[in-house]
Length: 371
Ligand SMILES: Nc1ncnc2c1ncn2[C@@H]1O[C@H](COP(=O)(O)OP(=O)(O)OP(=O)(O)O)[C@@H](O)[C@H]1O
Image 1 (cartoon, rainbow, N blue to C red):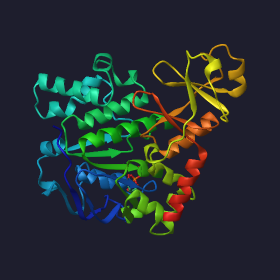
Image 2: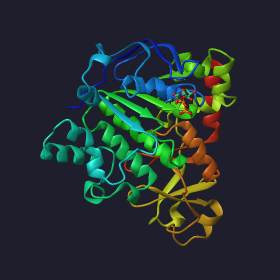
Image 3: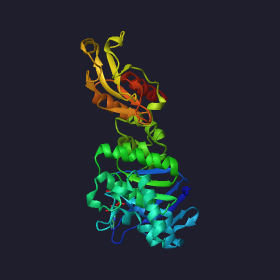
Image 4: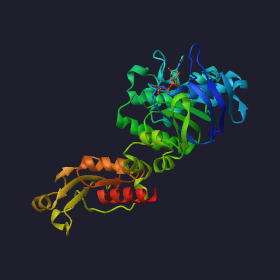
């Protein structure tokens, strides 16, 4: 059983770097509730990293107190703090001359776990983040893609089963598609693990997708607004927050709605091995061809169907699809890629329905009306 998250409390915390006139973090107070994801978002240099690093004491506060699970962080023994607080950073921060397994085993090693327990834990963590131990355990970081390195970084942060996880732009250095996948995986993991996570980003979309709560920070880590993503989207506290949310607020609100929450439409479907002459499209313009396991494979028009002797290679391939867990924003992207309806698939990749642009625009209008 994984250890669940505990509350973090920062009370009047200030950090003044030596030789700097202005404080980097000025009188910061916040409660991060147990088991939730709180995202710090704000412009470069506003103090996000400094604030986060004071929680695991990589940076010492000038004044103020921080408690982790009710205990004063300054009084927790360093080994114990390392066990309680996992840390993942941009570009994974892996040791280049250590293998993947050695990187993941660092904190357990420092904590004096025996070889067998560490090795078992490394395997378990690799499975958890979707890396096959047989294939990847012995590789060096340079032999991994950026996304795989980030997965190792997350596995390393989780290795000692800490109740608290600090993540400083952990997905900042990967392409947008890999980034989307890593975010989905983190949500899946968090669903299972319920850690307390403080996550730093300057991408507001990422904050909306991942955060139970978002803290929008201004200069010197001033809290401009600390609320749920939908509250911030609906009622930005001031002009600065509104500017950060951006003119695309309705579009961003689509990130809050999942495909499973809206009504799906249906295409006419037929298995690829069916006889084309038995397929009746009625008033529909398009036929969706499924493979033997009901996975969507091709779209064909009325005309293509009429001329076809087989459905196996008719029309054009389905380029992009979404799942029930995808956001409406992902669905919108799939529609753009497909040039029409998005195909929705279930957990085994099987066809479950379609989503069209009208549904998406209806949701935008509803969200606007409610805000
Ligand atoms: N070691 C240091 N010594 C002096 N000043 C520092 C030090 N580290 C950070 N600062 C300053 O403190 C302020 C906050 O920096 P911090 O790295 O916390 O910001 P950030 O919001 O995380 O920025 P970014 O998004 O660019 O990573 C900045 O003005 C920075 O120049």
